[in-house]
Image (cartoon, rainbow, N blue to C red):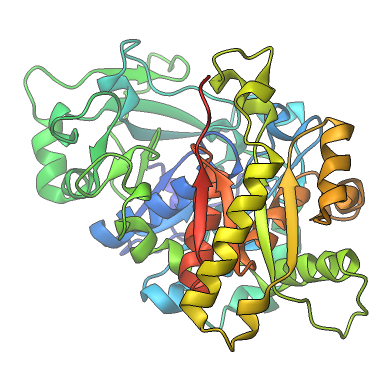
Length: 451
């Protein structure tokens, strides 16, 4: 990494900064996919940090027009999740990029964030995709490392439960500054990091952790022939191609990383959920926003307790291509009658888990959450007597940002006594894990009918 990562160097951008500790090693990656996929990447990154004894630096949740329309904000992980609580639970430091470098956090995405800058910092990274994809190029996507202006990286503190950032007035300066960009140059990972017997981009935590060790790094960088390289943009003739950085190790993608087998998120126990995910709770502020809208939904005053409820996540719109006849998605969507049967099944399961005398054995309320746009479908939901969050979406987006309707939905789902989700939806899958682990609640992911 260039000299600006270390203490005592001049600032390239106006900012109050700390610098990375020269005796610490770090690991980071870029975003991938929709909101839940990005959160799963965060969990994998933190898990890799634990395995490799490196401090993970979490990339922000970057706004994507594909998922949330024009003008979504870029959110730091710490604006959604209680990172100090996480660090206390896993006994390991975790950093946001806003802990390391000023950036366009908690502000609407802007075209300027895609623009390269002459002072972008040169950063050598590892590419998993370049090794295993037919294109032989690193993963390219919107909101990648170019949104990081790595003119100077900061932090000398070791984060703890009592987080000094909460009282740092300089934080406001750094949260509202413009985007952050790197000039990333990739070296392909060695093929031996691949998960044995798999196809595609699958690797393992142990193999990547070894690659980040001194021994593994030396083995990889002395291979003959040398590992292929790829630059995001051309370098001046006088600038040598950088090796992957050893202090701030980075990867183009960490979504497809496993302990022993592909798609461990659907196994119980799930290694990354047990190591990281179950400790990744929402911030008090995010929880309070969700509570406010639950109280509105149930017609409660601010001091009244929200009743127990069953949550349903019926993902439709962007999943219709899973149907054999996408022009007739009703042919494979789960019917409301079937959802009613699943509610009855989980109500009985609540009695079995908690006992007939428990208040949870008498749950009556159901909240439906869906991206369905058909007014008749929603009218049928209302006829059944189920509540729906969608009437608050515009208000939540106006008051908190375009990302927040989905965030509120996922918090509401995590608070349910039992949960019914959609098969193949990571949004549903992570909510199911939260309900199971945090609430000892039953859950079911409804399969698609491929007729």
